[in-house]
Image (cartoon, rainbow, N blue to C red; front, side, top):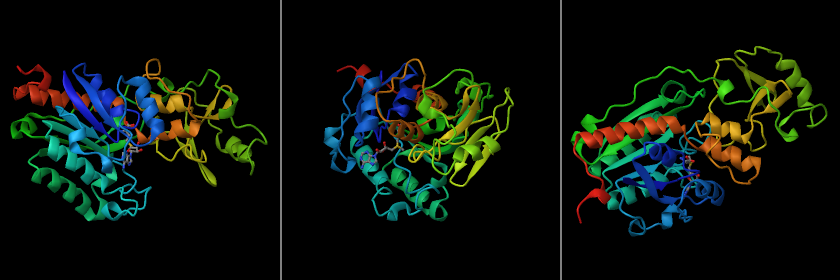
Length: 335
Ligand SMILES: C[S@@+](CC[C@H](N)C(=O)[O-])C[C@H]1O[C@@H](n2cnc3c(N)ncnc32)[C@H](O)[C@@H]1O
């Protein structure tokens, strides 16, 4: 088994993708928000280190084969303030905290995930600094933007940048990004258009101030059963999306509820449930446990996470590259 140390672990989407290869297990996870950490702990047999990464000494982290981290992206995304490394809350700096631990503990490989915009932020300077930092540490890197609907067979339009890093240049050369695969799953595999869900997810007359319901009813006229439209309430208007996939789930969905996708089902107009949002990220609805937490928290955790099948495919490609270069997992070495 290859061991993993996971940073900005959230609910463990990256860990799950690696675990699904059947050859990796997370032995350390750091996440300072107790709510996603609680979700993580429901699903993985380890206790999350709840400290701020700034306070974590590299010596506190076990030496592992791989380090993973989807470092916070607010500072880089269009939805955020576009401040990058100058971000006032220090979020842009968090990459360097992760780099500090990678540099000290020297995992054989690492995977970083972020919003697509990281590449173009500040005319490419931010991304160049990140790449240079890793290269100066002696890592050989590859990066690529992958869309969940093209690489994960999940009906969500989610473009993310993935950076893989290897200590061994031969492993980087052996590494091949997953190929595109056909999208055979649909929104119907994610959303239950026939069944009922608890009342709180439905929009009904007079329920919300400003009578959104009337506007929704008017805008959500579509009755295409085969290819149901997904809608979003955009403060003043309803946006219709009929591309056959769910628009990118975001971390701020749920906060005020305005970003959660809306659908017209047999039982009325409603929001996607938190469970459906997790399914849209490729979390198995029968096996991934969601703890008792507010919907707002769960929506945020789902939006903040990753598309698990994409991670699994990248993890498989990384393992293949390590195998090709004869890498032996730390725990399989003779003592
Ligand atoms: C983009 S999310 C990553 C989610 C994760 N990949 C998953 O699958 O759920 C970033 C996470 O970093 C955490 N975080 C932000 N700043 C942190 C810090 N200073 N120390 C530790 N965790 C932090 C946030 O609470 C958030 O859960």
